[in-house]
Amino acid sequence: MAMANILLIFLCSLGLLLLGGVGVEGNPNYRDALQKSFLFFQGQRSGKLPANQKVSWRSNSGLSDGSFDHVDLTGGYYDAGDNVKFNFPMAFTTTMLSWGTLEYGKRMGPQLQEARAAIRWATDYLLKCANSKPGKLYVGVGDPNVDHKCWERPEDMDTVRTVYSVSSSNPGSDVAGETAAALAAASLVFRRVDPKYSRLLLQTARKVMAFAIQYRGAYSDSLGSAVCPFYCSYSGYKDELLWGAAWLFRATNDAYYYNFLKTLGADDQPDIFSWDNKYAGAHVLLSRMALLGKDKNFEQFKQEAESFMCRILPNSPYSTTQYTQGGLMYKLPESNLQYVTSISFLLTTYGKYMKAKKQTFNCGGLFVTPNSLIGLAKRQARDAFNSFLMPRTMN
Image (cartoon, rainbow, N blue to C red; front, side, top):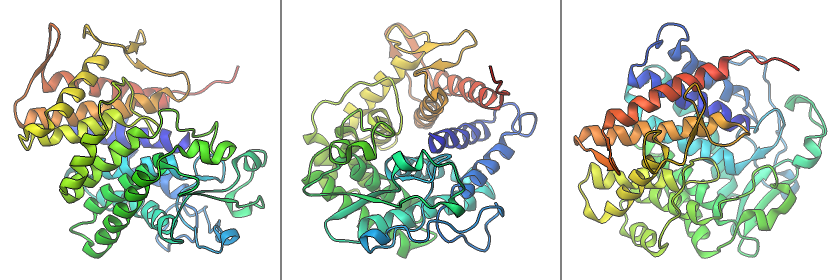
């Protein structure tokens, strides 16, 4: 879960920097934390490293990735302390890095270039996965069951570099939808600074999304123990179809994707947002059209986004979220902070949209303002950051 955990530092630090939280330049220093989160991504790089690599104790690795299937799948990121490349969480991380950059990049200062570099290291790899062989989407490199038994540096690894893919006969709408979302979101990041690359990303996102729509199925069912129990698609694939189409609609404004969204029918009403469950993120992303664009066709998604907020706010009569005595959200026992910070990002971003148009809403008798959401996000970000920095002790 290391990719998800370091993403929480990025989102946490970014949120506090841009919300003007206490400790931005103090102790802890969130600007410094944001900078160091990008160093982590450099430390997780696979492939041939560039000359400007700052984490100098890392070297080239995984240079034969893809050779078993006669393709080049070098690059991308290792997932955690292992040497496996799991595309499902990697693509989600890429989507969220892109979303954070789109929403707040103008205030990131010199770290904006680092954000673009982190995104591009992932998208260069994802492009290879999508374009190497017709009819195939590669979704991972390295056998996790073998790799997890061998503790070694990626530069020294001698474990088998099995490649995994989905196809029309072994579908994976979830991983394909997330890959399409990542490429579409990144295309927006690069639209002005590298138009040619942006067009390639968007063209590939369209192709991968068409595959996800045409060949329905969960990649967990197709790949079994290669992805489960590590990154099973527990929520199914409908949320990734919604998420992928939402990002492609934002990137293209093509009515096809809006019409497809409408065919998906009623969505689940979650109280979580993660690498597996994208419903809440899609609702907030699509609500932007209702709030900022005043488009009544997206009112449904605005209502679903507000329903999600009502499940999160601690004083809401509809809240389904537990909080610790110290006030930190508690969602799941494993890697809880990734959920805290992903949800806090949605709180912050929806609050930003509301504030731009001076909007409010109600959770029953609870009156909710933009500052209600942003204030909760600030508290969660500080608590999450302090929890992450808290010294670990061995029993």
